[in-house]
Image (cartoon, rainbow, N blue to C red; front, side, top):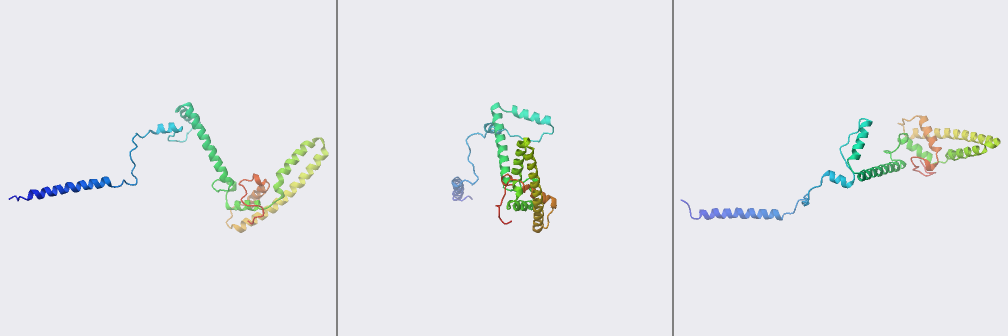
Length: 234
């Protein structure tokens, strides 16, 4: 037998379910958007080639050419893939990027950054040698200016052999002094490197010649640039 209030209970339950569902939907609508939510842009996403054309640089997957002929063909295809103005703009940007890269590498090399140093300057032993040489004065520091003056005087003194003979004798004395000073410097830096670094793998000749060649350069022309002042303790 069906009770008269049975239908009413079912209706109440159904109404309650609908009400709760509506409330849950309302809560979902009122809930804040997630942190990573991105609203629609209202316009289609531009194609990659359209963006590359607008920036003036066409980027594609690159594999190194195997032959010079293939390299020339790729360069030709790259040029034909864009207008004359776009090609000029792309080349200009490439030159600017290359110049900026060279400038940065040179700055880091002059600053003594190990990642940018030449092979001859790599190693903690070479750093110690550079700092020791840069913190002292030597007659060798003036070798290049003296040699330049001697060459000029000898050229101008070809009409006066006596002066040329005196200049040659003077240059010979300078060379002897430089050799003696270089030997003392090489001995000093080798002893210093061996005392500081027991695991030194450089030979005596390599360390000594490196110190000699750096000492004969004008201070402003040395690479990497000096990191210490004259008179600093090393």
